[in-house]
Length: 297
Image (tube, rainbow, N blue to C red; front, side, top):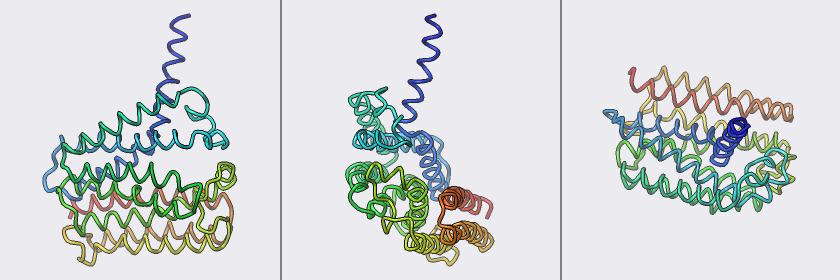
């Protein structure tokens, strides 16, 4: 009997820990950071690589835990989030707060071991996500703009970790992921519109599932594509892209643009979900192409 209780309780505890830190999102952020590191480094230091992965995970985990503490009452109102650890009662606010604080300290300390600039950008990311983006979500659609800043930091963070320098190269990586966030989050805001409405969240630029939102989604998708191929023109320092890779990135962008246009034409939840999936594929494949381009050049 005792073994049965332990075996059922343990997965619940582990799953709650994964959910309070949003492990899948954390892993995607770590992936972006590692891609940025590989683009910036001349000789790969595996110790730094491991520290960046750990620090990045703790950084995002802390932001997500603080977010769920702040939004616990609103999460209880939405179908998508009502079963999260805090609103469901499986985890206390104090426990989540301890996790968030420990993750913050560990994340910043580990990133500081790499170099102070990396730790500084990590701290800025946690602060903006927790203290600006999270409270603004119920106030204004501009929350997406504010949230795009910490959301764009991981890609450039890797470059800073590799070089201990911030210049045109990490700035370009930041710009790519910054513009990408708009079609990505507006797609999410579209297909979760009714659920977000229950929590009082304003995620769409016009506040509605309308042509205005769809047009802005297309516009920011175009900006994302254009910024993504800028390195091929040789304006971005050591961050460069061969013509072949630039064409691949451009074609990937056209795929994402296709789904943005489909959202404009169909104005459906299904089209928004397809755009969201296309956007995730785009940023992941773009980072892979960038890294392969550097090492196979």
